Length: 74
Image 1 (tube, helix red, strand yellow):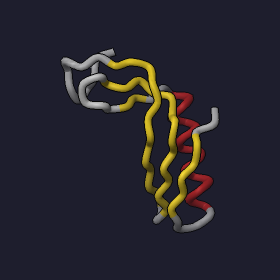
Image 2 (tube, one colour):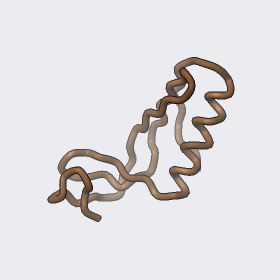
Image 3 (spheres, helix red, strand yellow):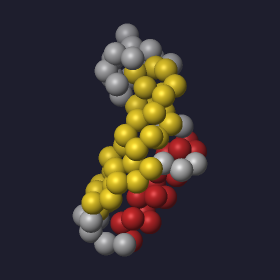
C-alpha cells in the first residue's frame, strides 16, 4: 500500500508503538501489528487491530488518569 503521508513510500508488514490519550489517561501500546511506511515510519492498522486498540484505551481510561505501557494482545 502507498503511504498517505509520503505518497512515494510503500508500506511493509511490521509492528509499531501506538500512543493514545483519552480522559487524562495516556496509554502506550507496544508491538502493534501494522503496515509501516518504509520512508517515514507512519503506521497503519487494520479495522480489527484498531477496534482492539480503542477497546484497550477505553478500559484503561475507565480506571482513571495515569500512564500505562502495555503489550498488544490480539
